[in-house]
Length: 423
Image (tube, rainbow, N blue to C red):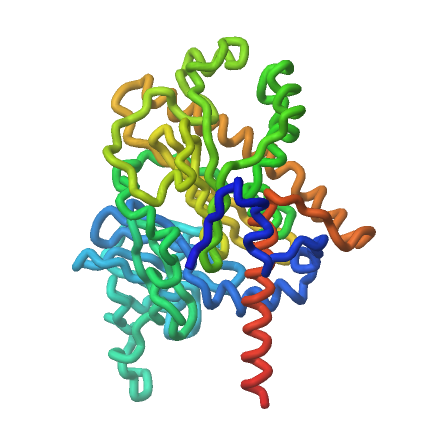
């Protein structure tokens, strides 16, 4: 069962003795051998979020997703019955990538009635069935019924599309998500459909960027220049600790209080925030989204700021009290590189002022995101020097310990299973 102690009961870490308090090694973030094990142990076994249902608005809508860590490319498509299908993006004839445009390594999206291979013209329906073979009579004992696209396990939860690349997933998606995450059910994700997206290649291990968003210890220092000097100095002297951390299976949550931006002293606000009525915490004009699910604001903060739900292995849903939300995805491409994607979701703008407020929030997020990522390559470089091999973590960095322990546990389980299979 999940445990969420109150701070008055003691430190966070002492309630999770399995995580320990010793200095932590970051070998899992600099080892090519460990990353190769993560491919099979994690990314070919876990449920992975690949997008949202709004990306497939009508019959025949599709998009592709490159999952480098699993050496996979998949197609997501809405079938004629409204269901979402997922297939490996490979033609059953000679193995050509089926869906791509000018550059086969790039993702693409669109709408179609069927998929046609660019190489020899084999065609597949939206349900993956093989419907046409060029010069079919020249083949030997061809059974089209058994040559449909290779299906990928796919489930949808609260509008989020997940896939599992295992031959047989160990858990259903709902079982995998567990009670902490499914406690978000009822949040009106389907009402927030105006999306802004950022994507960047980062020269650091995927877990290091996750670490950057799992604690607020860095905020007064790294983001200090985003506020007036007097406020920044005071924040650095006071420090910051979120009031609530929570673990549930492989997933993590940090919840924190907030500020009402427009109630701050004008000297603490930027002129553009006053002009656009927006900023880091989102638009000042908060939409009425109705009652919120019980899973939000578990510490009962007043005022509440945000909840960051970190879904194993590489997906974050960050819900702001101001009526909007963010998602982060971290897609490994090697042991020391990954692709970061950030998406911001708002209720559709009804006026130019709404649109400007949304764009201000998106631009501000980008600035903070760049600050968060700016330290990562420096961290990666020095970890790889191995000049120091263990590192001190404080009490509020509990989610970092948990992330790296879960990665080690999944890799350890995979190693044991492989060793047993070879006996």
